[in-house]
Length: 395
Image (tube, rainbow, N blue to C red; front, side):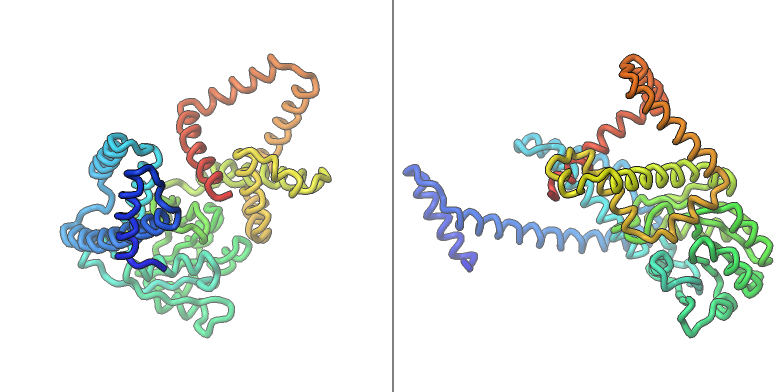
């Protein structure tokens, strides 16, 4: 492998050669790019060191991690410089956005938004050996709290963990949630907090209020345990009992970079019928149809458009996971029958339009749905374009 000096010497020689019209050899060009890439990594490391100092200052001064005005100014400056240098502004903007997100994540991990005088709590995660349980345990540990993990195969039993903790988090499958709540609820200290992370909220919230005299908060993380970053991920919070603890949960989640959305439990479940039940149902119907149409998947892949490929990724990802997770989400929602019937009615109508070859009615459906989405359509065009570009890069 060429040393830095060798690369420089070769570059100098190739400059002279180019004066006489000779191109630089490919190995030299690659070595020069590798050297620049190493410089970039060193620069990123130095940047991370400064970000750590920023986190310390923000924590000391009680500042928020995210500064929208600062981020807008940085994005504007970078894109302007990119244009002046003849670089693609959209690509540079994407790079800067990733850098800014990484900076926020780093600051959150360094507890920049956790007040210096914030008391350290003991948090018990019931079901802490599961994927979401591990994620919740890590979240509270990152915030500086002591974490106890209790699960079916741990020496520490759920009731013991609840007795020893200030905060007890129930993170178990939906069909076990209410039973576990009834088991641990009586052991939560009266001054403490009982909370859950279940995808449905009305029934678990009622169970928690009945099972304990302690404060109660229901939460629903709107992301899976495999997300690479918590920055900007959403969590629904449903207040049950004890506003001080609800404020603490909000403060802790936001300090880790999450966006907290408050809702009533019944309203949450109604909307989840669309966000989860309808979406999962649609994906499942597509997957079953694909599997039964008789065309091998491999035969379609050379013909995939970016949009079709995204649909395939979502569908394959869905069926690659645990049916024990999705079944209860869909079967236990009180609006499941309503939304699945609406889907079937819409499917029948679209099928009729296609069978009739009725272009005017087809266009009318487009107008109806376009009106429903309204201004969101423009955001969808931009964001889906970014996803399509990323899919193209990875294939």
